[in-house]
Length: 531
Image 1 (cartoon, rainbow, N blue to C red):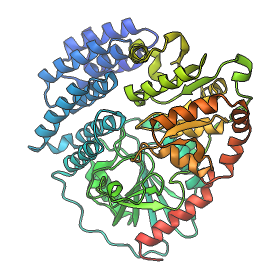
Image 2: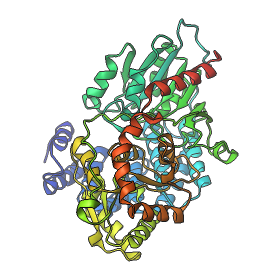
Image 3: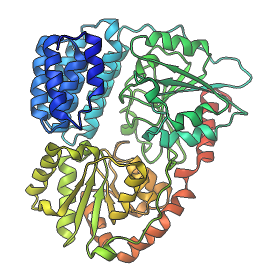
Image 4: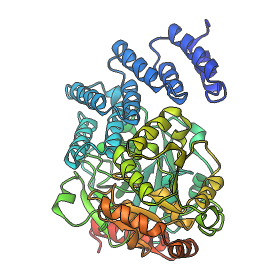
């Protein structure tokens, strides 16, 4: 190869791994030989292995890489993600225990951003699991928050600033065609600019111009202050900029998701800080004052509140507000009328489809003769994901020829049209759908969910309650199966849902941006002492 590092990195970025995987793997393999210390090249190689159905090889390579570079946070993060996807939870737990233990001894400040992203991978992975307790999930999040906060000296204590109008700041890297964008765009567009000054701090997270799109442009056109930043290695600097803008209430829209800004919040740049849409659990940060939620997702029980480092602020309505960006096709009659069989479906991330969820989906298929299920997610373009699901379903007597997989990516309009191919959507547990639940309902597809005792397992229930469809919420697995069976045998009910759900959503809390803005205003007034 004999090229400089910058030339190699540019060449790797220019090769399409999907269209020519063999060439990509060979190219990166050679690059690793010449630049063995470069994490970017090594990770690209491992990610290419995974994308081509060779996850086991990728995991082995990552373990080998960690022997060479034991303090590489990025290698740990990618390995943790792959172990989670593969369901190798024993190895995941051992990796987490060692990583958290090593960090307890302290770490170089230059690693802080990478550490925050990596501990976040462990947090997110815990939410998908059906094999650990709620208290364990809470413990992982608390530990992650402690690690992020460790060694940080917060800025001098902030006060509520004296301005003509309070200054409200939002921090996110997902104000674009992202799920968060679906739930925040109308809030910004309907914001009460007569009462508050709005500031957006946009984390490009190394994406440059790729972070921006037409949704970002819509937000930037509003009468607000829009500032972009990179959160790679100067969280304190970003926090100082926020402090200099004298923000009264600062709201995080990312939590532990990729490219997050929790390191910034750890410096406590604003007197009041809150976590909202974007992540369904605790940040674990003592610097985060509130988590914004609702009374369905977080019932007013001591058990619920004790999971969080943050205080819970419960809205008297569903905690979010959905907006469909795209021109969605009109809902059609339930496809079972034409096909002669009921088609269940789930378009959720495959990591949400765990063994317990599959077990009860299989029970439903067994109780509804001739029924099928369509699973749609980008991860299903990989054979290893299909095999995992096949093997689980086979344990419960469901033949693979009753399952339709859709893995290829489509335009959003084409994606929405796939809902016209299913009769009933089945939710995942313990990590419910959120965007997918809203999409299905918008397309007239009833969503059956099982409500648990955590925010992640009650989100769909909150959405369904907000549109007056509480009959689709099951209290347990037995109830879930019965509700699915009963709905599958009632074409009249399915037809009614098909033709009324979109209008019910449009006229309900879940699409009421003005109502959501009003409730946010009540929160601002309460925490600023201006009731």
